[in-house]
Amino acid sequence: MLLMKLKEPKMAKLTDTQLIVLSKAAARDDGLATIPEGLNKAAASKVGASLVTRKLMREVQSKPDMPVWREDEEGRGTSLIITREGREAIGIEDNDNDSSKDATTVKEGRRRAGQQPSSRHRSTTVDEPRSGSKQALIVKMLSRKAGATLEALVDATGWLPHTTRAALTGLRKRGYTVLLERQDGRPSLYRIAFSHDRKAA
Image (tube, rainbow, N blue to C red):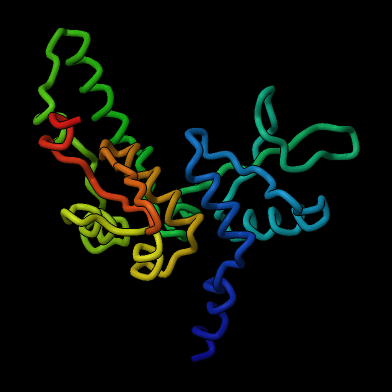
């Protein structure tokens, strides 16, 4: 019982600000964190330190064109980059692993060799999320003919809207074609396009 109590602080829930920082970083190709609008330096430093301590982010020396999270007394910038644990904390799997890179290399090799896959083949080479994960649930909901609204996805996953949008971005990076259909006077619908959708487009 004592051991369980000692572990509880590590499993503490993320604050809204921490979720926003992680979600925005996960949505970026480089995984770098940007300071949310309206967050002052002191608060940003506290949020960043907490995420680094929990290994959800790691610090790297800032390079040109990289968003700077904080600066030291000599003006040297430090940036934060989301870790695999950070992606898992918001329910987004890290698809930048070695197997994904190998798959990308194979696809690029085929293209260089002149083997252009058909649209049907492309639709079957997506990097599917782990079965039972929240991303798999989103894929199931978006695969329905009627699609799903952002509100429905938020309700089903328990995520914030920022996190849900980041998950949709993650699905696009996995190879899914996620369509956004705007409706007059009603919430917009998200759904995954299949081969017949692309032919009709």
